Image 1 (cartoon, one colour):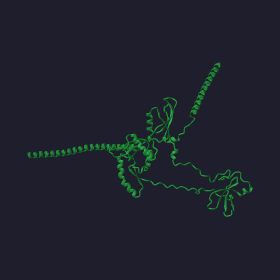
Image 2 (tube, one colour):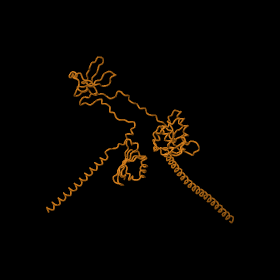
Image 3 (cartoon, one colour):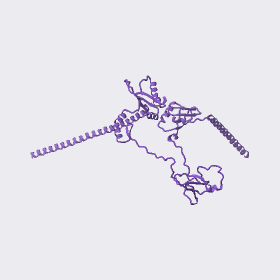
Image 4 (cartoon, helix red, strand yellow):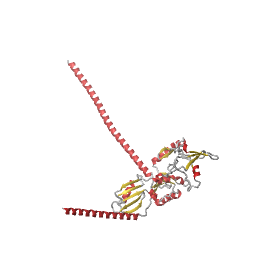
Length: 427
């Protein structure tokens, strides 16, 4: 029995050891899972944060590129300009001489915002960055860059280093596409396809119109024999049958010509008091082939458009408010903007860099109206000569209106007093 008890004890010990081993193994697995889960969570958090930072950096880089492009959009780089200037004014004068004399562009000094040499002075001729006041003026200058040929000076647009590198990499692909017959061009940092222009068909002068003529009536057809050609006369039913419209049967003659009928010639041998019109139309009948209306057409249709708006500016007393107004209107397409609450006293026209301002006010620091106009529309301004007389008439009308109001009030008061007195007497 003692052996059996010993064996049972040993068996229990073995079972407990096996159970402990199993518990330790499961504990190890749980610890590994917990550690791996914790590491995975931390890694996911770091990965999400990294992705957010990368997205922010990408957005900020796009913003920087946009601002850089916006800063450079009015810039032109002049290469080969001799570096002989001693001051900033000398450099501006050199650029103005190139634009006005060499390129034959009328460019006043105020159209150049800034000029500066690029890089450090190392003895070589450095390029000059010129900032123009408007983008449209910059494009006009770039269109005439061929006028600088054989002068040793050439101009280019201002691009960032990244865009220049991208354009350099695209040159090989651009040449390959052009050799294969594709019509492409390099625009900023992309290769774009040039769309072919649609061919416009113009109707030659003197072409026969496809307009349907009036149908013939058996009662209105007459035949008139001529020596060589037979003419057919088409007579439109009308009240006055003294005029007809004739057409020749020849293929060469397709235009209508006025003539008097044979019956009219027999009745009246006297010459007509007035010559016949070029397009005779009977009284009471409509012209079956009216002349085409001619409309005024201009290739520059934008010249005839005016973009008009209104704006309550609150006040324009200080110069800083004018700067804020100029900055607010940069992205707005307008020609004329009516202004209210200008709060400026007097009547004046001021010409600024971005617009022309007119204001009128009768009370210092209060009310006031006016408008601003694009400088491009300056040539379309017409100045009136009777402003003083108009204001005088306006004041006279206002005074007459005030006198009428006073008389009306006096009449109403007298009528009321009479009515009260009459009621009092009856009582």
